[in-house]
Amino acid sequence: MFLLKIKKPLLRYMKTSALVVIAGLIYSLGGVIRLDIEATQNIQHFISRAEEVPSHTQNINGYTFEYHTVSRETFELEDERDVFYDNEKTKLGQTGDIIITQQSPFPNVPIIHQWITFYFGGHASLVNEDNKLYEATGIGSSNIFEVMLFPGNKTHDFDISLTESNNYWLNTNRRSESNPAYPYYGSFNRNEFLVLRVKDVTEAQRLGAVRYAKNLYEKEALYNYTFFLDVQYKYYCTDMISRAYQDVMVPTQRQTGYAQALNDRFITSVNDLINSEDTYITSYISIKDKTVSIYYLEDIEEV
Image 1 (cartoon, rainbow, N blue to C red):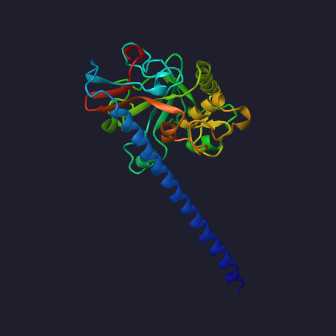
Image 2: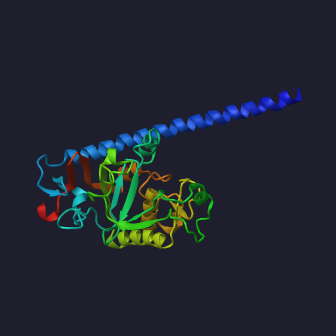
């Protein structure tokens, strides 16, 4: 009888907990579906504004790059910087721009690929003033669980930390044929990605966001595999970028480990960045077979 009295409350607690978890998952799924639909609509609307006939083409390492211009409207005219860093239009992004993809890095791993792509998005990079990229990456040779348990404010020798790299997004030789993702993405890093620009910020603010990321790179800040836990000294890709802009856009007293900029004020996903009222799309790239289709906001001198 005594055991039965104990078991009944325990079973009731377990059932209640299970229902709470299920309800939370359903609510989360609904939110993710909404964000995904909205992001798709934003991307499709941008593409629909582009000229159907390419303004020019060029051949690079066997690939045909087709450039479709999109006329600038309203706030897109306020930032007069070009979309590309170079005149040849092979290096995407200016200072403070965000290059992102919804596609996961594991297209060869069923379920995991769909889960990451749908829930979080694949990756995000922050462009600095020299067109290099600051990124928080979770792929390396270090043991994931050791990284998760290691204090983020301690010196370490893990290779799972913020990186600075050359801008590889339009690199035709980014991925070798031996790479597991090659059959899905070819020699590019991904075959669909886009560039975002933050609205209504000054050059000083953009440089401030870049300095924030550079400081984390110099400190070798660790990757945060837990996403919404252990946020004080660890970062994941989209989180690092939203916190970098929080540092220059949000008053200090309102700043938290859950960034208050470019997102829904909690976990920052790729779709959060796309759908944010504080960002807009400057270019979208789709690669199919040997054709690289680039849709981009026209240069100001072209207007």
